[in-house]
Image 1: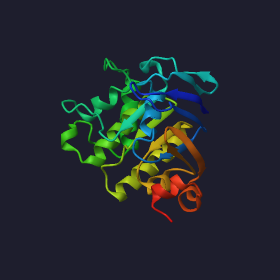
Image 2 (image 1 turned 90 degrees about the horizontal axis):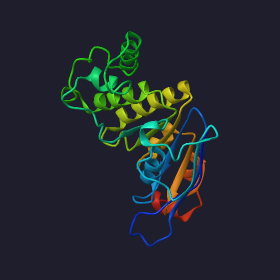
Image 3 (image 1 turned 60 degrees about the vertical axis):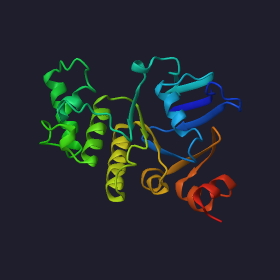
Length: 236
């Protein structure tokens, strides 16, 4: 269980009230985060990952506090819209970096990297460079690298925004299956409500630095009475 309690943050020079987040996510769940630009979705992910330091509050994973751990020690993997692959390294090496940055892998770790690539439909592409791959394939490599890290929390920050609808749906479905199988906790930030429908039984709406509501995804998208949700979705 990921349990975020009264997690507060204010950007330097900002005079408004601090952002303050409360949220719980179950093992095996992909929880989607939707809301207007600037509402705090990516800030919440950055706080969980350790890129930003909260002024107060807690981030608990299975009851253990992680908000003071350094970035490298957090049980977190993150995939961005830009895949952040190293263009001069081949596919296998990019994935292997998720296991050991020194690239000194045991035979078992080599097998793990190859198994992750096979699982994501990349078998046979180990020797290619990122520039030789399609956009969807590059995001698959980024997901494979996150998978081999074996971290309990997976953060997806607009990870599929540059892809077409069919490929987005395919990769989101793949992530959903992996998260369920590995009993990870995943947060998916997206500006596309359809992504939430595919990925999540529940979706959180983020507004003005708060979790305004967490509801079943279809209920939130089609029946929400909150004015800010209706304004965001463009419904009457």
